[in-house]
Amino acid sequence: MIWKHRFNFFFSIALSFSLLLFVLSGASFAEGLKIAIVTSPNDVHDGGFNESNYNGAMSFVKDNPDSALTVIQETTGDPAECVKVVSEVAADYDVIICVGFQFAGISEPAEDNPDVKFILVDTWPSDENGNTVSVGNINAMTYREEEGGFFAGVAAALSTKTNKVAVVNGIAFPTNVNYQYGFMSGVNYANKHYGTKAQIVELASYSGTDINGQNVGGNIH
Image (cartoon, rainbow, N blue to C red; front, top):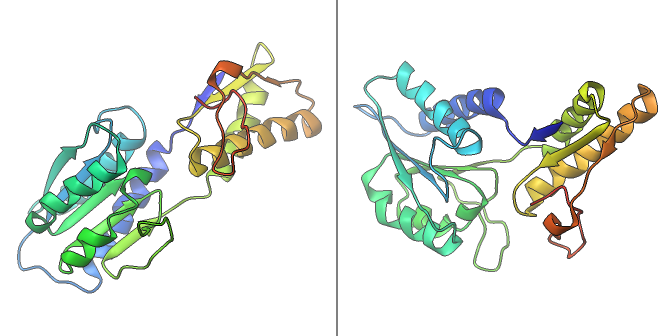
């Protein structure tokens, strides 16, 4: 059984709630909000991460029908191009939601557009050297991926009929690495405490390295 790294239901609610609180704190608008959600490289109908964020933003718009949501897709996945896209559209919106670690470098366009609210999902804003920075109009959200991965690992071990389990993540970025380690820990915990005999399947051809250069096995591809 393969468990895919998704946060669909809870992630959507968390984003919608954070969007509402962030927009209403420190700013008031006479009319509805012009909101943009910027994704890269997939669109908002990817069945996973981007779609979860889109659904969260749409739930806000449904509760505030005088607001409008525009979808902007950056297709290369290159961090520099992602920041460029945000810079080009920032002045046209009240709120910009940037989905993914590729947008960590948006501090400059945020500082250039102090009246625009930015929501940065799954990473912290950073400078050109990768150091985390604090920008007043950026609300950044990160998660304890290892906790979700742990419960997914336990569930996979308890439900497998072949005694073979695996997790499919993305590239070896810290959030994915955290999730994988959590998943593996969950499987090991179930084997020790619940009598399961699940084996974690790894494919060497799909292995990667984390930010410290350590091999993280074939669960990540």
